[in-house]
Structures are given as structure tokens and as C-alpha cells.
Length: 69
Image 1 (spheres, rainbow, N blue to C red):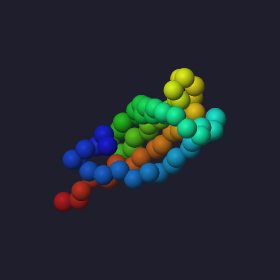
Image 2: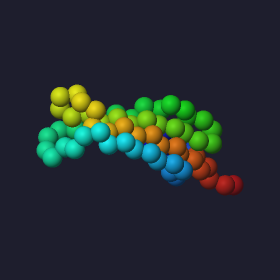
Image 3: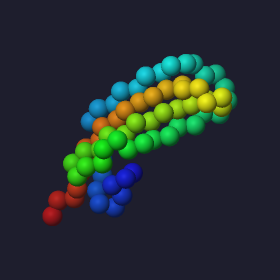
Image 4: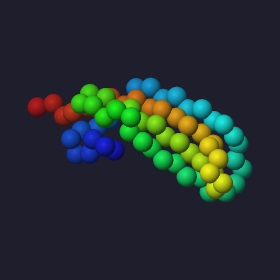
């Protein structure tokens, strides 16, 4: 979690597209930050198979929650 010890995050929106079915084998996912602001974050995650073909791609928006007090 990018926010670390500063607070927690909750999901606000998640959209994932699945491009191909995979029955077996190794999958690799990579998450890339698109926006990391004070109140929200947006990340894109891509999953590829062993041949490097895109299996799924998703985007998630997270709300940053800071402790009160």
C-alpha cells in the first residue's frame, strides 16, 4: 500500500477487463500508479501469461483515509 503508515485506503471504483481465459501456467501482474494524490490514488494493473500476452487489465481508484486527531 503506497500510503504506508500514514493511513489506510478503501476502494472507490474498480473496473477490470478480462481478455483471455487461462487454465494453467504462470501469470504475472504489475500495478502502476497513475495518480497518487493527498485524497485519492488511481492504479492500473496488467496481468500477462508466460508468453507475455495480456490476460487482464484493470484500474482501481482508492480513497486515502488518515487517522483523526
